Amino acid sequence: MKETGTLQNRIAVLRAEKKWSQKVVADKLGVSRQTIISMENNRYNPSLKLAFEVANLFEKDINDVFQYITEGCEE
Image 1 (cartoon, rainbow, N blue to C red):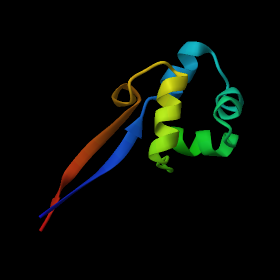
Image 2 (image 1 turned 30 degrees about the vertical axis):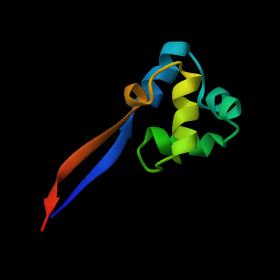
Image 3 (image 1 turned 30 degrees about the horizontal axis):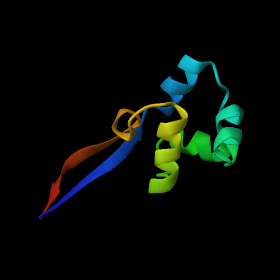
């Protein structure tokens, strides 16, 4: 039996709280604005290193930024 799920994040919410644009966040992290857009829309799962860098940027625990949502199981 294998559980499946998706990685979701609060990047857009945290970014809005700081009043930062996607470009500002991208520049601070050294990635493209497209990467930020894709992460915010849950179309791109960041590497573990980048996920920690995002959490550190917003001064949050990684679990406060990213959540793994289980979607059920396969047999």
